[in-house]
Amino acid sequence: MSLKRFSVIIAALASVILLAACGSSNSSTSSSKSSKTNDTQLTGQSDGSYYQSVIKNGHYLTSKSRGVNVQQNGNQLNLKSFEAGLMNISKKQFSTGKYVFQEGQYVSTDTAENWLGRKTKSNPEGLNPAGKNTKVPLYLQQMDEQDFLTQDGNSLKMSGMTIGLGINSVYYYQKQAYGATYQMNLSDAEIKAQGKKMANEVLARLRKTKALKNIPIVIALYKQAPDDSLVGGNFFAYSVNNGSSTSVSNWTAVNEKNYVFPVASGQKGPSNNSDENDFSNFKTQIQNFFPNLSGVTAQAQYMNGSLTGMNVNITTQFYSQTEIISFTQYLQSTASKYLPTGVPIDITVSSTTGVQSFLSRSTNAKNFTFHIFNSY
Image (cartoon, helix red, strand yellow):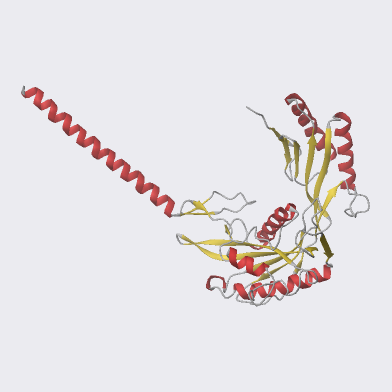
């Protein structure tokens, strides 16, 4: 009987110890999770091409101003090239090895909407000029903010900012709701003058914020492509404003141009037409061997007259997985033979059902690598 009572006591003690251990374990896990989510973390190591980004309280901070437009942006390529080009300009001033990237946190959504609006009595902050929509164009179409931080002990401090201003090259308007859409072409001189005028005002406003009083602020100007363009627009100038300067004193010209291959009849192509000829030969080769192609086009970007990159888009009518595999293998060898060398090139093969395969070659690589998208 005593042995039985002793066994019961031992079992009870074991249960208490087990429960205590579980409680301690849960408490420890909860504490660990709390410390991780309350800390500022970085997304990972920079390889020199990309910035590390900031994660706060376990969440990625999204931009407060990106995507705010004064009106519907009819060319989505403007949005993509605007953001990518702005990042390239930022890298000239803020190195990926020293600075950490953070999505814009100082120009709020409401502020961006006010700045993109017309200047009126109810909106004195509007950067677009006052006047009737049918007579006075809206110049400023979009804007974006990029923040750059540096390590300060165990924390990060705000150390730089880039602001991009997207200026319309064509102003679209309606004389009445749901009526016909009219357009007003804006000259390069007009685009530059309005962009530089707005940049001065933006810089002065940013300097009023305590954290932005003495940091370098880069302001970049972007010319929007028309709504019917098959490529995005391009940056044409930027300014680096150090110290506590409240007005822009110097501008650096950016000679950036985007083209579509094949160049449409009546449109101007790049001065170096050998790149267009290389693409034409590539297109001819793949269309001769694989007739089930709906379209083969390329977006080509030039900086100071030299090709800096190309995105090739191929639309197919393939239905067989073996056809996709064979075509992708053929593309790998043909692209290496015909397309320009020494620049990064991406090739996307797609159909109505989605992307079928993807090929890529970096600047210094000789051969293309590829991936074929399978279905399960």
